[in-house]
Image (cartoon, rainbow, N blue to C red; front, side):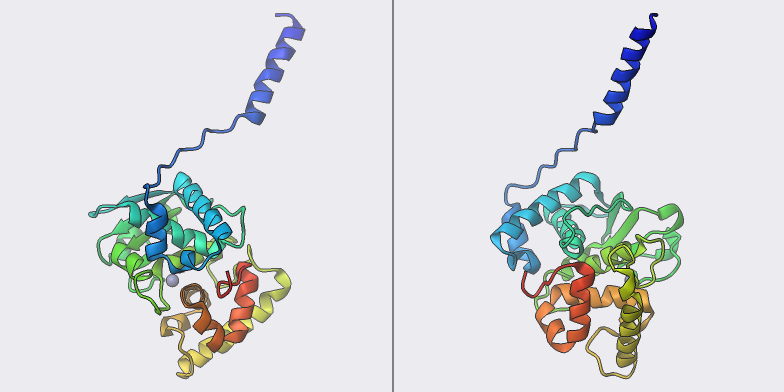
Length: 257
Ligand SMILES: [Zn+2]
């Protein structure tokens, strides 16, 4: 073959690999997805119209690259929307964010035995879990806990958000309460000492943050985030310093979204 033809063929192949993008999986949301979100997700209800649209786009995007399956249980449209909401809420301040470290979310009908999943025991009554080892890139959630996080107005717990916050924390390699992917390095020391101060308040009985947050820094970060996103006004009122700091970490102010 003439060298010039070989050159042309090689160029075509190179250009193909540079510009070819895998076709995106098309996601068919149920026709009433806006009503389902408005009916169940207070965070979504409180958004401006413009942000509601952006939230819906993020939900579609998430459902396009993460699979949600039921283990001994069914998965319906609302289940999918709630899982996606738990994923989108903590990263809503980062428009380009994607969970590259997650492939599947498995829903269970009840709590589950974490030992079956090779977890290195760090989870909350096994309502939810981010996998380690062979279960890397898999999140497990109890379906009733997922729903409870949304259908409990005035509550400050949301297992789904808790697990997604662990995943954000894990982005830098360690689940340690220090989300280095989100937090500017100069704030690290201030954040860790703020956590310590608040864990102490829990242990002394001077805090309305769930006592599970006193387990360690990672659990504190996840538990405080549940409260921050599900009951923002009360959190802001009772924990002003934490609230201000967390608006920086998450790059959003959920009390005024
Ligand atoms: Zn946890």
